[in-house]
Amino acid sequence: MRQALEGSGLQVTEEIDLSEAYLAFAREMRARAERGEPPLNAVYVVMGDDISQCQTNAVKCVLEKRLVEHFVLAEKR
Image 1: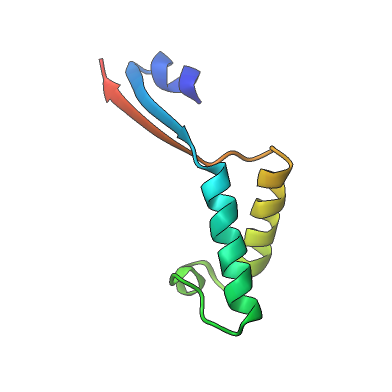
Image 2: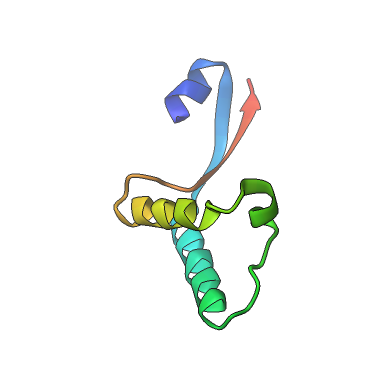
């Protein structure tokens, strides 16, 4: 991703791995569901009824290091 950004004329000024924060959020969402509490966001309205399976798959991919949640700040050179 960094190579693509820099190749298109952008300079990456900050990059933060958010994978652990994503996993913490996923754990909190699971705990809320187990307690019968509503989710913290309105993602179900936008994403549809199968969002739970999508989130389960995403968490699995993050745990297996096949998906990385990143924040990247880049500016035009």
